[in-house]
Length: 324
Ligand code: UT7
Image 1 (cartoon, protein in one colour):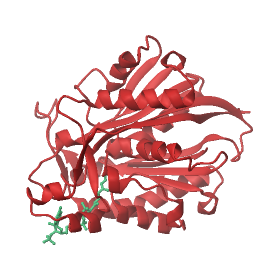
Image 2: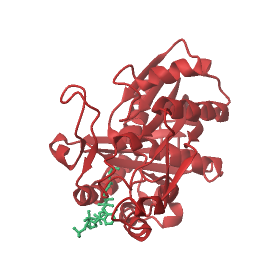
Image 3: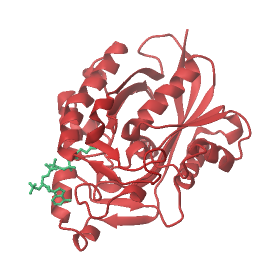
Image 4: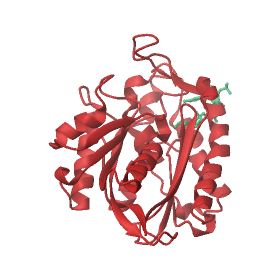
């Protein structure tokens, strides 16, 4: 017998305020056509003034709990991925815990930027498999609109705000790749690539919040190279190949990166969940948002094999393979 972490419910929340590409045209030297053709992004959501990452996360978590048929009292812990916390501390996860009315269990944040949800999910799986917890709420939530340089057309058109959540629960499996739940994961970081994607402020270095800086074309090259590789590594650990994959649920940064990764994995685009056009890049929220959107549309069937993959600042990148 092998303890597995099975997704019982998904949920998401997107702020009401929708920003079309055309909004940037009057403000920057850019066009809807450039943004669409170079990224696949058509619109994104921005949090309202005063609306914080924990507000978005709480709303997504409530939906996930509801769809799982659980209440906050059933949950043993919260692992929340974000790079845009409400405050330096406490962890956003503890604010979500309080917001949900939970008075027991653990709650902590994971910081791996756009790869954050993959890292959080793999951590939650480790805690479930080691017996630390039976039910964990795993959340990705971001308000990247708060760290944009609105004069930098190379970054501010790319990102959006939102939150996604999943409830994972322990279930015994036979220990084979036919089991439901998380089958394998692959996590990587290489801090020597810091200059490619970072925020130029922070508590200890500058005492400011800072703004996002990116050498987009270099990150693009790493993404195309590393994403298919990490997905293959995770599949290999589970004794599976690209041919076994029913759904690729990728980090939604750029349509051209997603297409290249699917191609390298030998997957037709019908097997790829796409939300980048409507959400933009929501960093750690992008995969749980995509999972929840596709789940709410009834696209995943029990027994189907899903692969998630993401790369972001650090650089950090990774993949999780799971059976629905
Ligand atoms: O989620 C974390 C990981 N992040 C990513 O995965 C992002 C990866 N990178 C990308 O998605 C792409 O590199 C971008 C979308 C950021 C940029 O696309 P690109 O095809 O790599 O363009 P580039 O950076 O090489 O720039 C090409 C040209 C430049 O002009 P010149 O120097 O050729 O005259 C840029 O200044 O496009 C220009 N450009 C723009 N033009 C109009 C950059 N941004 C814009 C813009 N509108 N918004």
